[in-house]
Length: 359
Image (tube, rainbow, N blue to C red; front, side, top):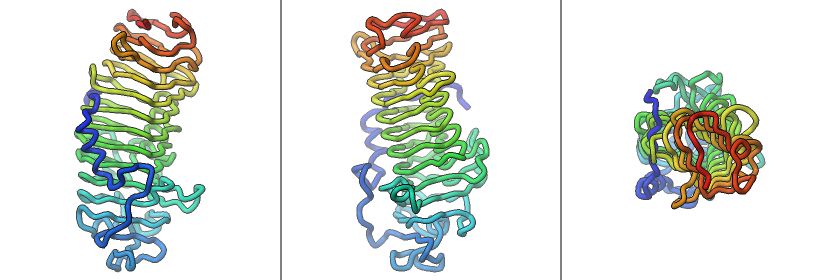
């Protein structure tokens, strides 16, 4: 495992490239109507001996992804898809396959009823990850499911993105599972409009390529986003309720942008953003709860400069918004604080040999 997070402000072309793998240009609306090449899964009326058409659906998702060609959309009706109902895990997509369930309700069903639930697990090794429910494929998409493992084993992820480019959207990653999405080996991931409730990590990013995490609801994990050795990371527009950390990582200078998110840090150690090394760019975020920014020995985050103000709102943070125990300078110019001007020991706290510049 590489020790530093390598993440870059995502160039517009790269963001567009991973965003366009969706067949849903408006991420808040369901996918377009099907076409004759689509295949269908219906747990109630289907049979794996059928042809997989809308009139003759298959019964299991695992049979569908194994039987359908690459570049095919597979549409899944509500139901619980687990080993008791014939599923074989891990469910392994083919390149270009799009697995589409109940996107309107993120797989939970209307009013939380009649979910489209995939629940199971099997061994799969990718770095620290030792098991999974679903394995993604290049240019694939998973949308509209509640997803959970069975045992909650440490190191198990609900979706593994291993060296491929894929999209995950409008899913609910249920608690009782160690990790929601794990990405590595230069994987490119577009994760948006999901609900993350996994126990330890919402997203576990280790050695990934271009990662765009946006417009998600994240609450319940110890660390919502853990990122190390990622080539390019953009975190924006998310609602993040942090247990120990909302975004945690060791960052390479200028490589990560965290912008326009809403953070709430629950009582406990660390902060909404944990920077152990490097200089992520932090702009336009709103922070509530406890510590907004926790800075370790090697951290030098850029939360605003004279030429590029931070526009972060720290005014509702209880206690110091920034806790700096490191040796470098933390830039935090052009933000809103509880006091004007911000006060050392009240609005920000320095316990190391470094400093915080606020104006």
